[in-house]
Image (cartoon, rainbow, N blue to C red; front, side, top):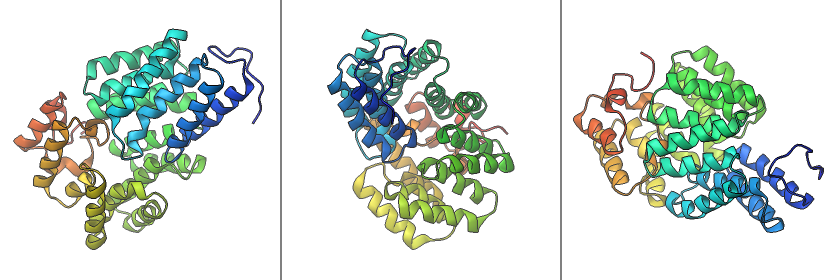
Length: 334
């Protein structure tokens, strides 16, 4: 990796080693999965080389706020590190999108939806070409509002960074949820051609095949996730539940619950156990778990519960719009 610094880099560094560590961290972060944890180390090392390197502070904050989606770690405790880092970056340079995005994630992890959206808008206004800001704002809109509102943000991220497997994966998933399976599968194949290891994209691909009636292909991708990404076995087990692999599903459920009180919650929906799904989400809400932006209430597997008063109460309890999520298709187009 080159040590040369870009001539136009704002909030840069005069330290080539710090910049190299930052670039390596950015690469790891874009790959998601285990790369998120590894990127945090790189960003911390970059900061140690140059404490005034604003972008390293911002990227460190963003990686910390993304870590709970890939490991069973407490978002609140990470926020105590991420928020000061993001604010420090903005004290040096208020135009860094990553720092605003990290603060937006911190707000959404606390169910502070209005403040989160304001921070996402600041991120995009500060640096319109920042693909990550559009990806995270798209996730926010998907989890808190509708697929129709979220999809343009992911499309914009894909246009800004055509090599982002994450952006393509999300475009594919939302096309799938929009009832456009062929377009979705083409986009998801594109995402996996860019990077075949991104866990959410593999899950999206398995789901797309499952709901398009391609059981053998769905199982193929599910088995791949099961082998390569043990931390994602809960998502895999939910797919395997639909495919009738009950014994392995129940074993995965026990393992997930031992590791995390909210572990395996999607498996209950896949098994049709609405009572346990309700109980888990009520407990998770009381504990201020980040489930509202970890598992979307728009997913198809929840459609059988949408008419329940208990489902509506869960939506209200986290401050989301029950009119959206209690509709027959949730936040998906009808």
